Length: 375
Image (cartoon, rainbow, N blue to C red; front, side):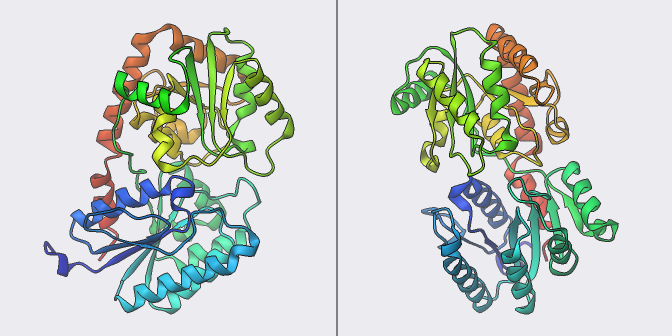
């Protein structure tokens, strides 16, 4: 099966895309699959100007609200119809919520005769509780194979859905982002774009702000840190974020201890926030896997992580990251201060994380593991 025509075509359908950084995931995986000889199409809300992958914009780059559901469903149906007409054999779909739209989509895909490979990012919803009956219906009846990014997610999925699906679950790492790494030139450009001075030492909290992300722990840690450390917050607050947390953000901003960008970050600007920071902090209370962590590593940032099992599974304490007990603001402050005062440690973490990305999260290697699941 070395030629393009000997492999059946694959389509990745993703309405999230640029709204949550999945455009990088999609393009990295699809490009690597194309290099392996698979004809690949991506139906999402972005496109790449050139290359072997066919990109079709079928979804909005705005966040869907309830009144936009007809547009979402029409986008899904049009994508499936085009895939059917083009003779696509396998669909790759992302799962975060296991809601009724996911049930409708997967049932329709199966009725149309597609093989469906599901990438399960989250097992339990972080905003609304996941209905386990819907989850079980999808994973038991509608997915031919299931990909998760770590053993923790696999075990959680088995806890909810039962051991009968164990033979259809495959642990494949999350693909990395393009390796950038800090340099004087990229940092200067980032600081100019964001209108930031070169000093002080900056901590980055990046991504959608929601209760499970632990921003309040980081805000509390700031009170134990010297005034020459500044917090850089970049991301859109999700409905349900505690007003008290956002009030603390504004207080730190008025004091000059924080620079705040409370908005959806356009893909072309994401790198600027990482390049303008000295370290990244992920003080999460719950997580299954994190694209923000891999992005920070790809940008050359040392990271501080809460000691959650998914983080422990991907990084080694003192080698690729520093850990603190989730919710322990004092412990987080100590880890941040240790990194600030030890440039050699920061450099060591950067180097080890880069090696981890190359050895474990290379997109070509990830695509090869996916290809083992494809005809």
